Image 1 (tube, rainbow, N blue to C red):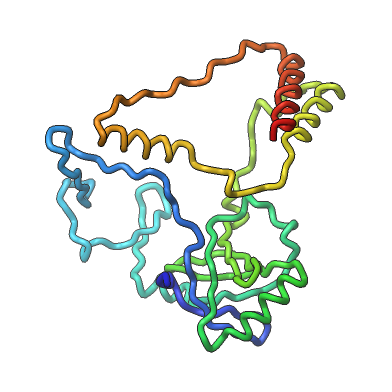
Image 2: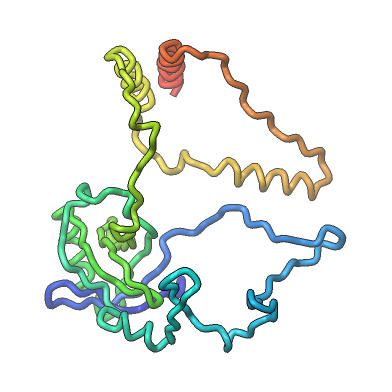
Length: 261
């Protein structure tokens, strides 16, 4: 059984459910270490002071909040703990909303919330109620001295908590190119809609694989086996320049792909 990242309680209304927080995802991106080319010795990084280049031990490192360029206010661990003390240890549900109301851009990281033994019944009641109503809970939670907005949703028998960005952390999409007046014909839009229709199918996560990770693993194995490493060629442009021609060609290509699948 995985170790809980954090232990606390879900609080909604007057009900408190003791839970543990567990990571719901596991990054499998290829990880590379920096080595010295002459003997493959690991490269280590040291914590050094910018002013004199001297190495700084952990006990001499403090946390500074930059109030102006180059001006810092120092915070102790106790002060930071006190800031989040009001919600520390709780997932405080403050309202329930339809999941469709939340733009996916707000989602940050997914976690499982699993009940402690004393809270299994209350946990199941909340899970079934969320599933039946099709709603998600909006909550506040403090993890590692930082407060997050979060959602709670039922996924079969488990509650998934997704931490969120605060609204002022979302950047406005400001692009000069989008301000240009561009006329789109009904035929062009219809072609794009046909491509979408031809590529529409139910989502099956098992069909999605990380091709770049597999390529790294295969190439690494080939290097170990002493085989010749062949680098795949990049796909070449088709030469289609006219937008309407490209749309028509795409409609035909996606139609054939749909017929094969």
